Image (cartoon, rainbow over all chains, first blue to last red; front, side):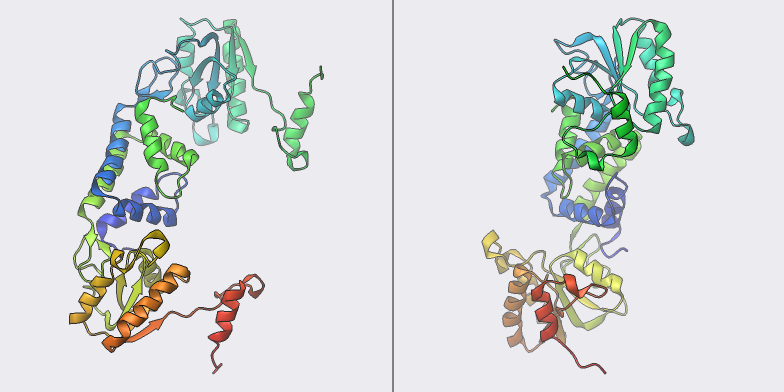
Length: 200
Length: 200
C-alpha cells in the first residue's frame, strides 16, 4: 500500500506503531499532519523530540518529569507520612485528580509478570527500598492494578516491606461507584462482600 | 493537570490535537513515546518533520506525494481515458485497493461547503480544468462522498465539465454489498430502487 510515495508511507507506518492507533487512524493522522502549516508540523516533531530528550525519572519517586525532583516530591503541603505505590504515572495523575490524597507516590513503571519475563528487578522496587533508607513513612499504600500482575506485585511488596516496620495497605476492592450491580463481575461482587463495612 | 512538568504536558497537549485522539489516548501515546528508546522517539519526530518537508501536491492529480508526478500519474499501464475525481487521497487509496480501476485520479482536497466557507476556489477545481487543457479523457467519474457536500460538488462539477465535451459520471448509489437491507436508511433504499438494473 504505497500510493503516496515513500515518505508518506513511512509516516503512516510510524504512526501505526503508537498504542491504540490502527492503520486507518494512522492514515487519518498522517494526512492531518501533511495538511498542517509547515511550522505546526515541525512544532509537533520538536515537542516529541524535546520531551523525550528532557524527560527523566524523578530521583525520589521515579515519576516521569523534566524537573528533578518532580513537582509532587518537591511540592509544598504534601504529607510525607504516606507513600502510594502505583504502576504508572497515569494512575498517579488519576489519584491527584481526586484531590483526596496528599501523600507522596512511588512509580514502579510496571508490575511483576513472570509470564512476560518481568520480575521485581525490571520494575522500580530497588528504588523504593532505597528511598525507605532515608524517608520514614508511616504507611505504604499499594495501588497496583486489580489484575493478576497487580495483585502479585502487591503481595510481593507486602512481604518485602512488612519487616521494615511500616504499615503496608492495599486499596479497597469493591463495586465501582455509580455502577449497576447487575453488570458487575462475580469476583468483584465477592470482594465487595468480603470488604463490607458497618454503616454508621 | 500538570503533574509531569511542562515538557510532558506540552507533548500531551500537542498529541491531543491530532484527529481522533482524546486526552486519555494522548496521555497513553505520550507515555509510550517517553518510554521509547531515545533514538526511536527521535526517529518518529524526524519522520514527521521529513514527511511534511518533502511532501507536495502532484502537479498532475494533486495527490500528496514526495515524487512529482506521483506514482500513479507516472505509473505504467494506467488508463489515461478516465479520471476519477475524489475528495481525499484516502479515497484514491481505497479505490486502488479494489484493483478494479486502472484510470487516473484527481484529488480535490475537500468538497464545496458554503456553510463552512468552502467554495470551488478552496478546492482543486482550477487544477482539474487546467489539466483538461492538455489531457483528453473520455470520461470523468465523480467519486465525491455521498453526503450533502459531496453531492453539491458533484453537481457543480457536472455543470462545469459537460460543456467541455467529456462524459461526466457519478459513482452508483445503492445498498452496500454484504449489508442487511433491514438496516439500510430510506434514502439509500430509494436510490437503490431508482438505480435498479436488469438482471442478465
